[in-house]
Each structure stands twice: as structure tokens, then as C-alpha cells.
Image (cartoon, rainbow, N blue to C red; front, top):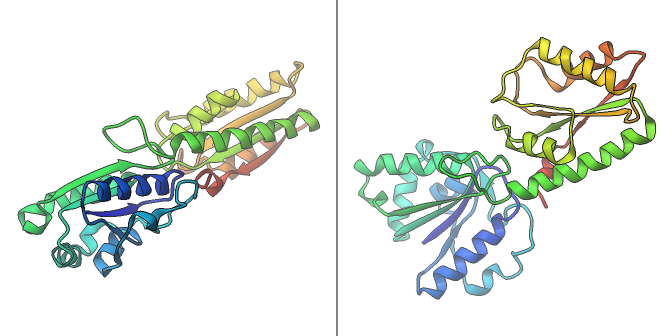
Length: 264
């Protein structure tokens, strides 16, 4: 059995690898780990691992194996050759949408390569929670908690300065899960996501809402934006729009949470 990580890092990946390695060994299988995803599988970066080889991985963030977004179609022949060379009979891929897409490409290539007629399994592990066929992914809840804690601190800053609106950009690609759930958890005033189309009139309405809010006792605002929610309404654009429309009533700041959502 070979185990690899594909896509972006997510909290819990190492714990999943550790569990898979030890379950495999306890059932009498030879277990290999692959560095750098499908690219590593193509290049032969394959190592047999022992029970104690994954000791201490449970609490480690990121990906100890290394993970890349490379898909099998770019190196199919080399992958097939190494599957044959190492006599691999099962493939466990831990990762996000790229892991799902990669295994799908391998399955579709079974007609050409009999070496790929083996057991293949994907364990969803992504902060975006965007793997088809499941509502649960390793790392997505941790990412929400990381984003939520950051937003809580940002709200404290806004409370101290008064009449301030923060626009916070989350990760997640084209999937709005992270922005939506975080916005609900922290009580944000608005959340912009790719799935829920919006236009300039919606932005204008949100600015008016925040303008009215500044007249109440709660003189702060928090707006979340998924990183790829719109091609033109970028974080910078929203900052400029809110700053211009709220001039004299509130000021605006931005905060890009970035990769801290991946590594807990």
C-alpha cells in the first residue's frame, strides 16, 4: 500500500497518514509513503515505512510527506512504471479536490494500464471542504476555528478604535465554506462568496447598513470575503469602495488571513 498527500496542506493530514500506516502494518501489509504527491510517485520518491516511522506525527501541522498539486496526467507513464516496480496493490491519497481529480484520472486510465486496476481511496483533507461526495473534510473545522479566532481579535481591535470596518479575506479557492461558516460564527455583517453572486448594488446596500450601524452602540463592522469570490471586486476594491462611501462616518482596514488557516 502506498500513501501520499496531494493538494494544499491541511491540519490533520499527518494524523491521517499515521493512522493509515499503523492500520496497514497491523493487518500485515507492506506500507510505503510517497513524498510530494503524484509528482513524487512518478519520480520514485517512495519509501517503506515502519510502525515507529510515524511516531510523533499526531500533533504535527502541515504535511510531513510534502504535498503538491501536480496531477497524474502529466506523468502517467512514470507513475505506472513505479506502481509496477514497487508492486503497489493499493493507493491511499489524502488531500483536497486535486486528490479527488487525480484518482479519477488514474481510474480513467485503467483501460490503458492494467497496473492501475488496484484499490484506490481518497481521504478528504482540505480547508476548503470542497471534495465532491462528502460534507466532511479533515482540516476544514480547524481552519474555521483559526479564522474565527483571528476575526475575534480583529473585532476587539475594531471595538477599541470605534467607527472602524474590517474587511477580512479568507482562503478556500472558489468554495465559500470557510468564509460562510466563519462569518456565521463571529457574527459578521456580510460575507462575499463565489457561489452567491453579488453586484455593486449589494455592496452599496451593505455600506448603507454599516453606516446605519455606526449610529448605534455597536460602532464596528466586520466583512468577510472569500479569496476568489469575484474577479473584479477584490479585497483592495472593497477597501477603496467602503473607505470612499464611509468617509466621515467610518474608516476601513483590510486583513488577509492567508496560510495561518492551514497550519494548526
